Image (cartoon, rainbow over all chains, first blue to last red; front, side, top):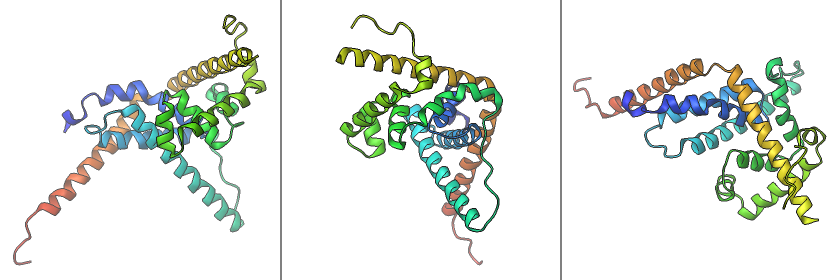
Length: 170
Length: 66
């Protein structure tokens, strides 16, 4: 059984933090992101001997899991509100990571599809891969990406982080 | 004009990539990767074992007389 999972530990150590950060960028709290990453990695472990591109595979699984989790959370809140119960407990990031989470805050300015496309692009997915995964046309992916970048261009928090010099020769 | 816009968008991409790297580094700092790995392997092994048990049960010959 052990041989079936050769290389998994090394892969996990190299990609785990990036995977958690990926889910955070999709708009989830750190604790939720850790839980989603753990479940996605567990599914990867089970299928380790047949998955050919683990980095892409685990992100697509994580995105689906995170979306399902968000949907369940909304349903729970609605149920509890209808029942007149207390407000839900919101997953808050620890003080330590709060500063690093400003990127997630910036991405909140985007629509859901724009955000997904931009985050998947940051992860290194091609336009075609994103189109296939989201079930939309490549032209639509490019359009979402263009709109996302345009929208972030004027974002006050991101503007502070923009490099002073940029590229001066075209 | 178009070059100015493109230059600015490239700067946006650079800022996003830098922020992305900072976020990942911070997550790596606060998350215990070894503990997470152990939990995942335990859960994964449990699922693999359960699946194999189910295959064994399905493949087992019927018990005559019961």
